[in-house]
Image (cartoon, rainbow, N blue to C red; front, side, top):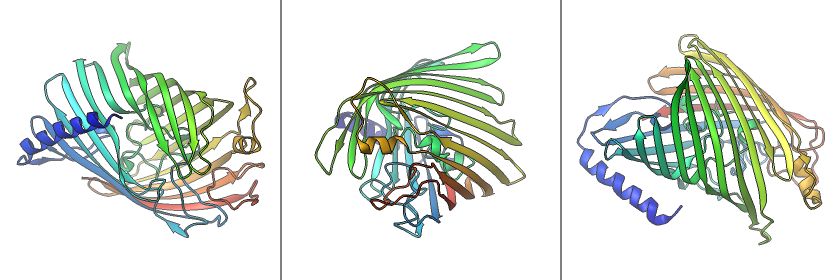
Length: 388
């Protein structure tokens, strides 16, 4: 994102902070962009969220990481690791007029360079033509999944982290560009139609990926306890290898995603699916259910991702590409959430991961030549989530 634009947003929001510094605190907890207690003035809100997590893997020949940007994890590098589920976020929003508002969200989490340096996740200005129609410009959350807006707010969902086999499929969480939303009724359903256009940069331990011409359309239907979402997006991506200095070819990507959630209060069930196409075609899914008993929410989850098949019309794949395409695994999870105090929870989760018969799955830092195909391993995780 243009540095001048970010500085403008920061300056504008800081001005609101100065005007609101003497206002009393109000307790407001929600999801997504409202997932925090806030200090409110007529034009200003400040809040934050965080998670402190620890995990252990029984697989000592590779690291269990929940995202490709996480360089190390429990297993080979650490007996117990904090990097998968620990982060801290802060958010400032301001309303300048009934139509114009802005938001800035900064998150500190374990990065590809082995640091917890803060990173700007959101920084955008919004113009609302009506309460049901708006356009935003800046850095915006990419609405691929049901929990995309609140992916970093652990307090807002039941698990220690969203199911890895699906959410790892699309590391891109934000877009630098523009989006527009129009909300309207279809019978008893409230329908929200959103379109996006932008670009993105992702830094990993050994590479940088640049995505341009990102465009997509997403539709969300809500009625009572039911939420349905479907989305389609495209982009062109190129990867630069930091070790060799080689920049790869520009590759078109497309992703079709769908999700459904039913949550009447005492219990919930939700499921999501994605199909990805580039030089290969693959898919992933999960289904999860839980039941709330007073302060406790036990839950079960099954997730899996398929091996990729190569699409004709592209150059012959390299041996490394063939092996990467075979990566597949499935996970059975069980856990419990305990809301033991206001705006704070503690979660415990057990995962059993089964690797495919011809790959090491998503394990990271596996020694060269090590074959773990078809093996099972176990991960135990604990996290405390909080809002402030």
